[in-house]
Amino acid sequence: MNGVNRSDFYIGLSLAISSSAFIGGSFILKKKGLLRLASKGSMRAGQGGYAYLKEWLWWAGLLSMGVGEAANFAAYAFAPATLVTPLGALSVLVSAVLSSYFLSEKLNIHGKVGCILCILGSTVMVIHAPQEEEVDSLRAMAEKLKDPGFIAFAVCIVVSSMILIIFVVPRYGQKNVLVYILICSVIGSLSVSCVKGLGIGIKELFSGQAVLKDPLFWALLICLVICVSIQISYLNKALDIFNTSIVTPIYYVFFTTSVMACSAILFKEWLRMSTDGVVGTVSGFLTIILGIFLLHAFKDATFSWDSLPEYLRGALSDSSWDQPYKALPTHEDLTPGSRSKSFSSTNSDASWIKKSSI
Image (cartoon, rainbow, N blue to C red; front, side, top):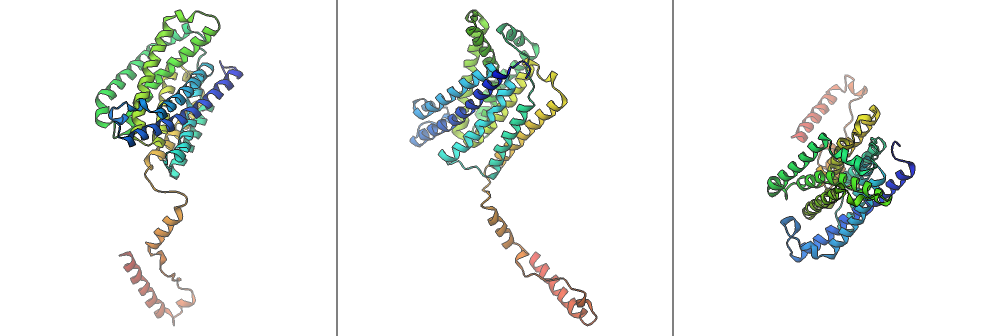
């Protein structure tokens, strides 16, 4: 791979996979804590309450997410964002499997197929992901951050987030899962850029450079704390109101899309992509979107493989197919002696069809 040696690639890959496991489990722990608070009558997070700060299960989920984010943080220091971010699809699988065991949130066949499509699509995106320019110092990162395109992108993210928080959340926050998810996702794209810069700075720190005297390092740290705080707050609201098996994959899709867009603008990755790379990346993205559509659009459909025969039996019993089978006239039936009989039989059949259709 260009700009990433083989050992760094495997280190980043291992950290990204372990990160998905911890983050997927954190959704379950947080949801369990929020459900316990709701059963006690405490003000829910979706209503602006912060009673979850006293619940140990929520803190366990936060710790698990912290470990996952730390692994994710380290992965960004060893591998490109376009490799690490799509692997977050594994957290969708972990969360869906664990929620079926510990939260009794059953996924129908559409949801299971949707999760599989999300994983397949993210795998295709990883295979065809563009390689970012090698940024090996905070000075090079500073030059990237001064790019007018990235500045315009960051301003759009901040303005759109403020509009969502001030005007959209009060009216539609508890009705539409996309409101909270959009805020978490677009803010998360900036947090990934901060993580990438801090990871580079920490690597420079271990090599003996005076990174702590660089104002950019502390500016990135402050921005990261602000972005992560906003993400945690609105992700808690989404988890408190909506089903975990729905929040997790939708959050993944929008977060991955935002990070890929931010990374493309910041590191100019797409300019060096081949045609098959572009087609593969777009195909993987569309596959993920299809998986999310199946998961979200049919989440309330009570349908499974076991119920398929019941649907067929019900359809057959309600239709005219359960009527006795009547054979078509043969050549012998069409002889002159039997035409009158065949004609009367045909009339009776026609009258029966009209009755059954009525």
